[in-house]
Image (cartoon, rainbow, N blue to C red):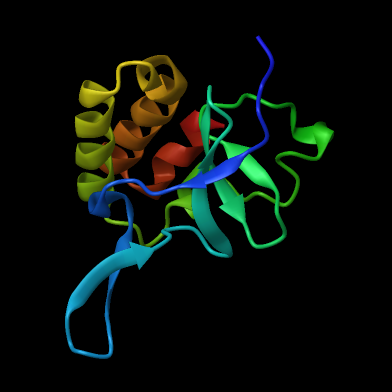
Length: 127
């Protein structure tokens, strides 16, 4: 099966941070990763697309030296300041509705659960 080029997708509001728009309404459209512009898919995987065009696929176990993970901080740093309870709850609800993502996000959800339970010091065990 041939993988398509990545295209931007919109996930449910719970996958975004909130902001207040010009009318004073709370909107959820801020990506929870620095320099990220959107979630993306190639039809098989879901990832995070950054301003420079690169996509980091969730659940992708790319070797650190291949450039895909270059410049990425530790797992805990990636989620610093993110409401982990809301993120994990949202991801689990989304996976329940879209089972194809279960295997894609399984390791990430385990790591997020560990980080949520043990705080940043759990990152040493995740590396």
